[in-house]
Image (tube, rainbow, N blue to C red; front, side, top):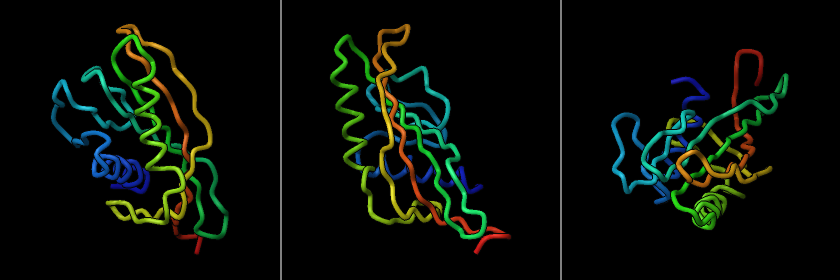
Length: 145
């Protein structure tokens, strides 16, 4: 895979290992799973964590880059507190994470939440939140050391 794919799939694997959800590269999820997905928000199950990467900044000469990781959480039900709790559990795991190498090989120097908000309810009455994390990564390339 490429760098961005390794980045987002690595975080999906980490969240699954931490017990925050179920990550599957292929296949379907059980109705009771908290699905961990990449980019596309799944229609089911009702409870989900969706990860999307985006570029924040790249040093022109050094191999330092900052990638954003949008973490969308969703929980079923009329009560918004369960999605706040899921978002909080992800925060407790990711914010201030020490330097680590993700599954797939991307070296993350630091990770912290930059912003977050409620996304309200979808057409099925499920509550969602979005939190944006900044991950400083080591990304050498042809023109950077």
